[in-house]
Length: 339
Ligand SMILES: Nc1ncnc2c1ncn2[C@@H]1O[C@H](COP(=O)(O)OP(=O)(O)OP(=O)(O)O)[C@@H](O)[C@H]1O
Ligand SMILES: [Mg+2]
Image (tube, rainbow, N blue to C red; front, side):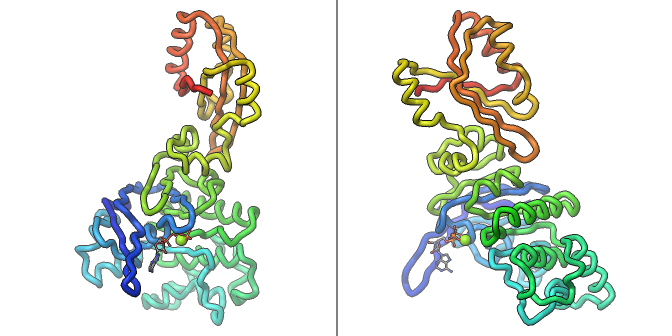
């Protein structure tokens, strides 16, 4: 759906060059809710603005829905852009227009008829739960309601892709949750592919199926949310993941292990049903291993559970080997870790 290939972006302002993107490649598939996370200045907004050609790459390819944007005429680009909606942190509503007029604006601009416009706006206001606010003005709405208007407006021209740049960053946690639920509904009911930028890992955890972690203009890690949350590789990804899932052993437990001269543990990672299956019971009963749980953490991600266990396992080598075989058959990821 969206392919970025080796993108470099250099801004030139008053003879000062800023390199915002340094060789970024990624692929967003149809139906994805693809999250991009990174600290301020990492290049996230630049990246997402390439997709609807608000920014042009200095080099590299931007391919949207099979079309290489650089090859398209201005007219063709306008058509492609109609397939891409965008919402923003500060909503960007027209303060002097009613909610109805704000949502209708893209339709008016593309010269749709009055009847069609009315039907579409009515449908969209119902979809985002604001039917009763059609005649209100933006300054009469809460932040969450304003973002709902932003979403309705972005959906007006029936886009295939929705870009969200920090769409929940100005909202409290409860309102954030309701907007994320709405984005999930947009994805489910309209089949719209979503690319979402955030600096909060909890946002990624709640709605995304894939994630890319950015730092200083580069994607330092990307993959399925379950993979990246389960075993982040890069230090920055680990920092982000630690804000919502404890994948590392807490320091106080490490100190106790040091006193007991324990240096190796087995880390198990279980997803979904496995998380609740009695895998540990099997290790003890079936393979006669002596298992003590050192640390465990369970987290809800999307609609499944990610469980991480750190175990101290003693027993015969042959029993351990049989147990590892069993874990593999159960699709439980395991690794020996040094503490
Ligand atoms: N229009 C511009 N002109 C010059 N430099 C820019 C422009 N837009 C962004 N930059 C620079 O490019 C780099 C990346 O900026 P970008 O806005 O993409 O980061 P970001 O990850 O979205 O940050 P934030 O989380 O603060 O929104 C920064 O160093 C920024 O100063
Ligand atoms: Mg930004």
